[in-house]
Length: 259
Image 1: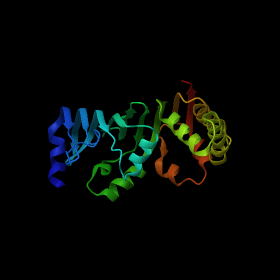
Image 2: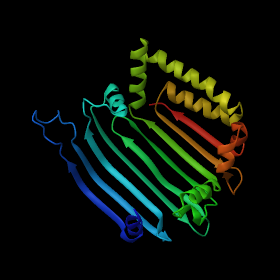
Image 3: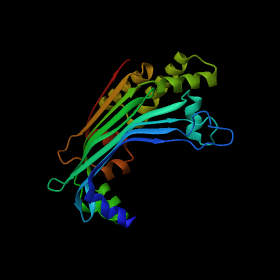
């Protein structure tokens, strides 16, 4: 809403701690703890406004814990229950900042961490981001972002149990051992990624790291740097019919470490 949009740049930062939501009680009593939700803290930050739109934004939710309802029609919840999760305990955060002089949009932090699941972290920098990216016209904002360039991107994925549960469920459904399914996944990646990305040295390094991560899920780290100091156009990457050509404009490093 317009009123909320105008409020964002004024509050600077808000922090709330110790939230809890109790489930409604039916005639049959509480549903086995389902509906219980608590949050350790929530942080909202918005500053450096441009025409009423903040260009520096941080959102962080820490310790969001909830019991999953055992009877649910939501596919996502049903999948989590099938994977053996009776409850969730997750944290996530996002922080971006735009520098008007350099026109760089810095993704300082995009993280997710789940108990018994794992975590991922994404950081990066987009260049040539104009002020129109922060306007109220969403069409112009989208065009402005597509005219930006990718300078660098770092991704880290840490398996904390989610991938193991996925493999176990797949093995159970197919009547195979977990190791057999794991080998199949690693082999499929070794074939599919080169078919899509090509056989360049960078593509082989990325394929090898992903395959090793699937074989022994631990930590996967991928970093990409544009060879051109001005970056690589997002429109060029998104519209390229030749992924190999797009990869050739980036310096890519990928490593995988076992548990």
